[in-house]
Image 1 (spheres, rainbow, N blue to C red):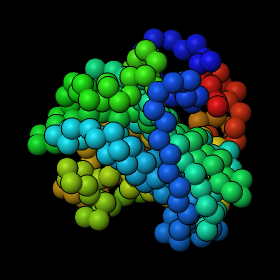
Image 2: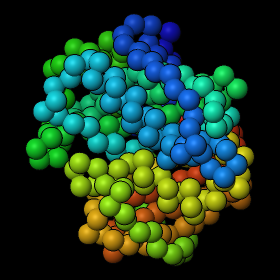
Image 3: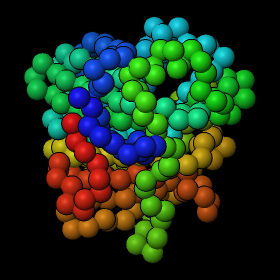
Image 4: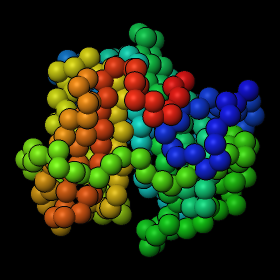
Amino acid sequence: MMPAVPSAAPAVELLEPSDRGRVYEMSRRVRLGDVDRTGRMRLDAVARLLQDIATDDASAADLDRRFGWLVRRTLIETIRPASIGEPIEAATWCTGIGRSWAGRRTRIMGTRGAAIDAVSLWVQVAVRTGRPTRIASDFLDAFQDAAAGRTVSSKLALPAPDQRAASAGRWTVRRTDLDPFGHVNNAATWCFLEEVGGLDDTDRIGRAEIEYLRPIEHSDRELEVLVATDGEDGRMLAWLMSGEHTAAAARWRPGLSLPDGDGVTTA
């Protein structure tokens, strides 16, 4: 049975699949380009996997190719990181549908014990313009059973920079980070959190979130990184700033306990 959730919940809940509807699965192995210097899978590599399985699911569902999908927000919870060479299985399903967006949940399990959970908010856009467009009928046909009548909100959850935020240097936009829309790919943006969070020096167990507030383009060149601590347990907030505008916001919470009662339920 599905847990009860509020109508139009934001995409922060790690929900189990419904007892009906589509669940798409894929298998792969963690490669050298996916891992940090200690051999553990990085957040940007996890995000690429989330992107790949979502794309493969959409292709298998034969969705209308006039529409594309852009990530608005992603939460990744690492219970145990995947390691280099580890065979992993990923499964993904729809957890809610909004006017122009949908929630997508993904679970990654490895033969050596890797366990990673994620949920993303994806926005449907017209390929020619890049602008949001109402969810198409073919998407509803494929995924509304899995959504089980739930709606998902496009509301974001991370705070804006405040007086605690201090500059942590610059982040350079590379041409190799750009996608076909001319924006920095959502997975590449995770690299700034990897850098300022020093996650390769941690056990990587914890919850990471990132939200994309505006497209980052090559013309942005260098963005300022702001960082602030969020409590006394190693939690951190970080922002990518394009002038006075926030391009992306991120949060890292080490460990799996959530003492501030933010309403997020883990799987």
